[in-house]
Image (cartoon, rainbow, N blue to C red):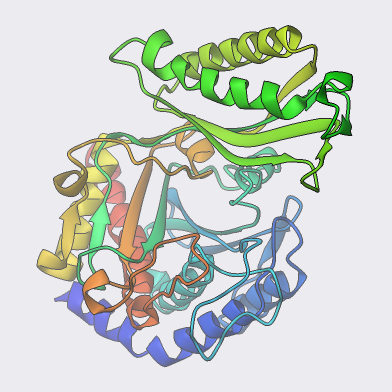
Length: 411
């Protein structure tokens, strides 16, 4: 079978992919500041016969195919790491203190580079064009909109898009591929920052101060009521305060207390998010005034929910099952069709062109990979890298071939 031939061909790249991934893992970079990673990716693409182009603040694109007229499919890998100190016991640990590839983006980059090598070897079979996207700043939800604004979906025009994300700590065998079903697959996300300003003073004379901690604590409790009392039972919204900071010592009332967190919904139009934001401002400003504090509520780094195109999802599942057999499954069998709580800035692309998202298990909890993404001890099983490369390449080859055939039959 052609599928098994491609998988075996990808497997011959495994040693090279491990070296690539481990090099990237040792040199994590954050946001748009990716000098080492960018240079590394461009060099590899050039070695494979591509002419990579920079796009936006720190993105890279390269084209495969184009020799035969047809559609264009976009394949995305994100490149940035997290501001997280690594605690994983691996020999190729991060060399940059306070930075870590704790979400698996080093895996994604290595897999797409492997796919680039496969696609170059099969370039004459591509009935159209594959646009390879290496994206920065996914963790801060800014990389995708930056590349879109710089023309990601044009020259050539993109007709469909696909991404793969690795996952660890799941009770599924490593190498399992999960394809998201049609509809909303992940929530939107927006960051918030609440600042409460009072008047500092000595802990022994609180009556001479205006305590921002007390006000902020009341705000935090009151905000939880938005979910239970202000959202319709059919609406979905998650409000989380993940960072609360005030004061430096035990016997001083500080001038300021601050809270940071996120709002997540599954509303494509973000009407629920707008309601939550409006009520957050009203609640915080009202409580602040009651406690004689000045309060500001700011919102930033918005990412919409991911929308999966149903037909593309069904095609992707079929392609993956042809390639991996029973090791490729419909994610809805596990999720029950519910959207995941995590967010992904490829969602911006999903609101512009038909998009599918896939997940590759890279570390099963059954095999001791106990921690999930964004944990300082997370480890990823890089023995599955070749499977990711094969999945990327097979997705592009099959979609372009089928789309080209349908176009020929139905001009």
